[in-house]
Amino acid sequence: MVRLRDLAELVRAPAALSVPGDVIAGAAAGRALGPGTAGLACSSVCLYWAGMAANDWADRDLDAAERPERPIPSGRVRPGEALAVAAGLTAAGLAVAGLTGGRRALAIAAPLAAAVWTYDLAAKNTRAGPLLMAVCRGLDVLLGATSSPVPARAPAPPGRSPTIPARAPAPPGGSPALPGRSLVGALPAALTIAAHTYLLTELSRAETTGTTPARPATTLAATLALATTVAVPPASGPAQGALAGWYAVQFGRSQARAVAEPSAARVRDAVAAGIVSLPALQGALAARSGAPRAGVVLAALVPLARRLARKVSPT
Image (cartoon, rainbow, N blue to C red; front, top):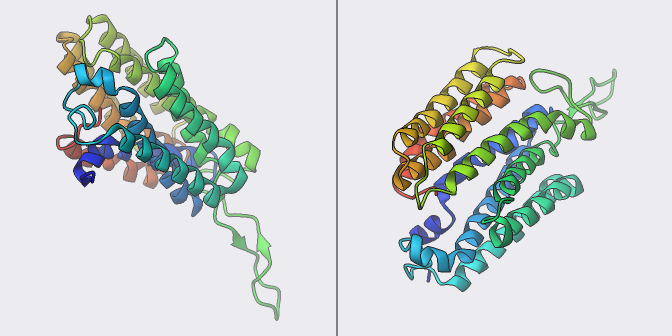
């Protein structure tokens, strides 16, 4: 029987702290924050964990040479068990999405699940790998925009109880969006998270071999540019800029070290930093969309993710 710790290592459990923020950022940008957001975040985590388990199953022969400490090559998890975990989590993620957001959520969750499996089984070691992984995280953000805000009730007419439904209240920062407009409104946030993911995936391609200083230097410059675009327009209070700056420091500092010493260990450290610092970027996006409290809560996950990453590797 698989031990809980080995299962946590298989699915990179601490890295899941970087996932709910995708959905929350998308919901905030699409004016769709509501009770369904939590359910969609759970669906997102299931699909993320499924992808991690499928990744290790697909890479089991390569990991035997390059990452023998991982659960499958070390013998702690059998390949069939990893594949079953991946399939079960995928089914769970799709089921939760359907139960929470209905057909609208499934219309995003199903392509997301397909993209995750395609990346793991076919595209990861190709030139299309970073782009497809970016698509996965972009779809994850759009999944959040399929939720519905809390419905409100109209004031009761004299002598009647307040049972007449009214339009949903506007989330912080604007009026509630119509379903189609929710996805359109979330597109900038989805593209931002996709850009971060592309940079991170491109950097991770050298985490077992090391690289030249040019690779981390390029991703560092792009990271700083990305943080700047999130921090500047539109201004919605101090949280937006502060969180974007914190993201730049957390991820940028480790990349700067990899520029100075582009060894495999330094690159892995930079990749881990990119994973655990993502909630700060998601928080900045939520704050930019008028939900600064949600943004601060997301960013508060960064120290916890960093501590957990010392116990279970997120890469």
